[in-house]
Every structure is written in structure tokens, then in C-alpha cells.
Image 1 (cartoon, rainbow, N blue to C red):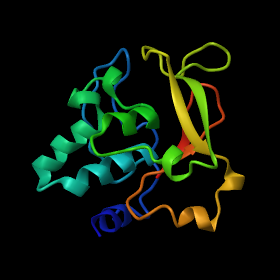
Image 2 (image 1 turned 120 degrees about the vertical axis):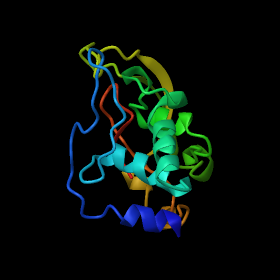
Image 3 (image 1 turned 180 degrees about the horizontal axis):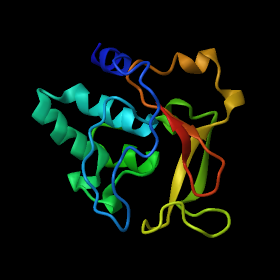
Length: 167
């Protein structure tokens, strides 16, 4: 019920790109902007609200959700869905176990574009194992394996990226 309540609370909010402040050259600050957001900040807010007891607890949880070890810095942002899921306690990637017969596993160099440039200067390139489903193998039967409160990432074929959208 909490998942449904908090995720629905943001329906209709306008999309906002680049709502976080900071980069490799400018100090990162913890941003709270519930008026507009992108898909990643949406996940940050919903996940943080799920377990928060009050406003101050929400802010603390937002810091832990958005940044590895809760350390507010550009290098510690969970820039990729892989990192977001890996660094959060209680979040488990179920793709390979629940969809064992149809999941595909691929190695990707996160942050490294096909032309050799970086998506995010100052963020190291890491080779990670990504599990995903091809759209053709995802159908109504597959949907029954998911439940309210599950997080999803839409796999990206672009070199250097893990997902193109999350929800």
C-alpha cells in the first residue's frame, strides 16, 4: 500500500532534466525538488519515502538512496541503475532468477561510449554483468511475476549505459 501511495503521489508531475546540482568541477549538494523530476529522482523520492518516519528521516534516507554510503558527492551518486540497485540495502535484482529461462546476461562497460568518450567525466568505467529481458519475451504472463513495489529498468542497447528508463 505504501508503494502504491507514494508512487501515485507524483503522477502528473512535470519532467525535469538536470535537477541535481553538481558535477566533477562543482560541489554536489543534496537537492529536494518534488515539483519536477526525472525517472531516477522519482525512484529516489519514492524509495526514500517508503521507509521514512518523518521529514528528517526522509532527508536522511534520500541521502542514503541517492549516494553510495550516503556521502553527498558527484562521484558517489548512483548514476546508473546497476549502482542504484546494488548499493541499496533490500533491493535485489531478480531478473535472472524470476525470468531464468528468458533472461539474457551481458557484460557492459558502464560510462564508456562507443566512441571511447565518457558519459560522465570523472566517473570511472566499470565492467558489470547486466541481466535483461528482450521485449519479445516479456508478455502478460511475465507481468504476473512482478508485483506492486518492484523497481524496473528498461535495458539500453547503447554502449556505456545500462538502462534508458526506470520506474
